[in-house]
Amino acid sequence: MSRNVIRVGDDYDVVIGDDAWDDLPGLVGERAQRVLVVRAPTLPGPAESVRRALAGAGLEVIDAAVPDAEQAKTAEVAAGLWSLMGQHGFTRTDVVVGLGGGATTDLAGFVAATWLRGVPVVQVPTTLLAMVDAAVGGKTGINTAEGKNLVGAFHPPVGVLADLTTLRTLPRADLVAGMAEVVKCGVIVDTTILELVERDPAAALDLDGPVLRELVERAVQVKADVVAQDLRESSLREILNYGHTFGHAIEQVEHYAWRHGEAVAVGMIYVAELALRAGLLGQADVDRHRAVLTSLGLPTTYADGQWDDLLTAMRRDKKTRGSLLRFVALDAIGSPTRLEGPSEQQLRAAYDAVAG
Ligand SMILES: NC(=O)c1ccc[n+]([C@@H]2O[C@H](COP(=O)([O-])OP(=O)(O)OC[C@H]3O[C@@H](n4cnc5c(N)ncnc54)[C@H](O)[C@@H]3O)[C@@H](O)[C@H]2O)c1
Ligand SMILES: O=C(O)C(=O)C[C@@H](O)[C@H](O)[C@H](O)COP(=O)(O)O
Ligand SMILES: [Zn+2]
Image 1 (cartoon, rainbow, N blue to C red):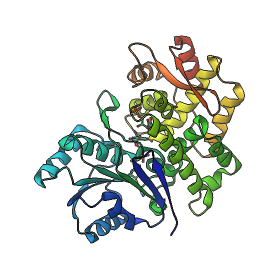
Image 2: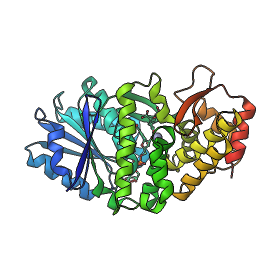
Image 3: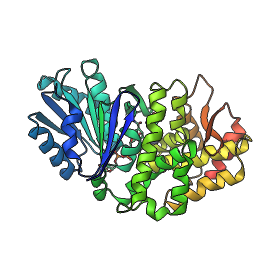
Image 4: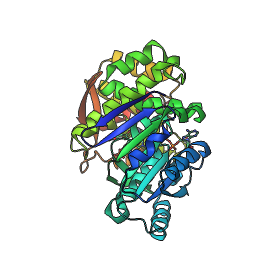
């Protein structure tokens, strides 16, 4: 069994391993009596491994299967979990475990952030996207009718256990979607990620080879380095939002029928096209975005005819200040900057360039 541990600042460890369930009680710690396992409904195998590891350590396990995917990220589902915690007398030394993809870990983190004004959470991500991004860094949240992640809190986990064996049951489309956030880390910071994918995209998606593990470790390292410096997104952390202004707008317009990673892939093309028009990026860099995302099977276009709704959704992005639309953009691969207040004409022209 191999494992690697990446420390996030001085705060907590991200354990990346295979069949690493025995590490879970250690991450939960010795003060807990009860553990609420908030889990996606699709994961009987990992759910049983988690239950066994926790019960074996003498903990009372409260099992809470929540609705799948984005349907979990609602105020109603959160309220149901608060009731459950109340019924079980869940105290400040008890621990929430989030087991599933990013939607489940976002919900679990939010419930942990809000119960008794904050109880510990251990994240156990089971999708590639949650391993490299959602479970690390302490952004938690739910959606409202008006948009994505509009209610939430910064609440870092006390530990993260990314067991790579769980990826074996993940549908291929979800594995591919997770690669969008890996590529994001490559274009904003660690260009070796890009080179690894460009050299052999099939190897990047191969669960049996070494490349996927290296990509996971590199992407987690990018995220860990950024959030350790700027947990609350006062400035630097915004770079992790590359591609998300347009990406979140697609998700909302599509009523979450698009996977997050797919929408972020198109969002990265959109903002690269915008940067081209603003004179920040060259055509070769935009082409490189398209080539690497296409090589992994990610989408790079979005339907025509949705501009008004997309623009309305983009105005609700958290980086917006007043009426000033703000984007994370690149002025070179590996060099993020901000693009503030692009003209309507530039915004529209970039949309025309991604409209398929
Ligand atoms: N908090 C953050 O920093 C952050 C970062 C990135 C994304 N996110 C959020 O994460 C969510 C997207 O996460 P996601 O892509 O993991 O999607 P998801 O949580 O919807 O999971 C995708 C699907 O895979 C299933 N699944 C999960 N693990 C599985 C496994 N091992 N085997 C088989 N099926 C499995 C799920 O049940 C679901 O149907 C979005 O809500 C996004 O906003 C948050
Ligand atoms: O960790 C961050 O910061 C990110 O922006 C990572 C994103 O991949 C993630 O999708 C995040 O949930 C988006 O946050 P939001 O603040 O735009 O809702
Ligand atoms: Zn994201």
